[in-house]
Length: 177
Image 1 (cartoon, rainbow, N blue to C red):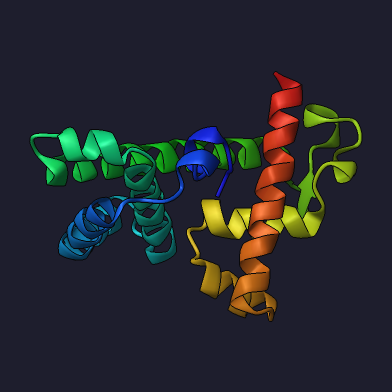
Image 2 (image 1 turned 180 degrees about the vertical axis):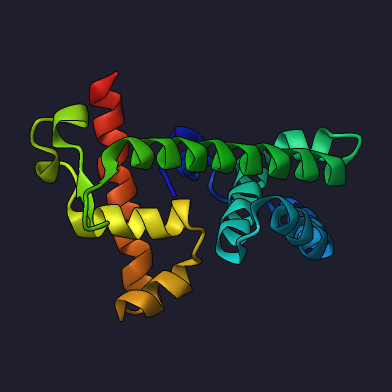
């Protein structure tokens, strides 16, 4: 997942009191199944759903004061999850659209890059392997495990390759705008 200030643990506030820890632990244990079901219904990918859940719990941790002051902590978690899911769906949509712009089929139906459209030297930005791993994940909807199996690599290596390819594209999108 992308790392930014909102998604990292605050260094000076990374220790919860015993009361806060117990509050958060009970809330997470009590809501995990329902939150995962909600995320699965929207994202239709177990890996993405787990990522959204993890991001939600991190937001709860980072905003423990707001969560405790909330009249409805369970509702706060559900709304936060919905926001995280929506953010993931938007990011996925952006990547799909970018992949569509990068893709062109030639006469033999082999995938090639549109070098002259996006960047004159696209291969320095993203490799064909990176492109294909992103296409399988975001356009064709394969899970990380399915992509790993298809490529003959382990789950963690596949996840890291997807993250690296996403990062390259994200940086290029920033530069392109």
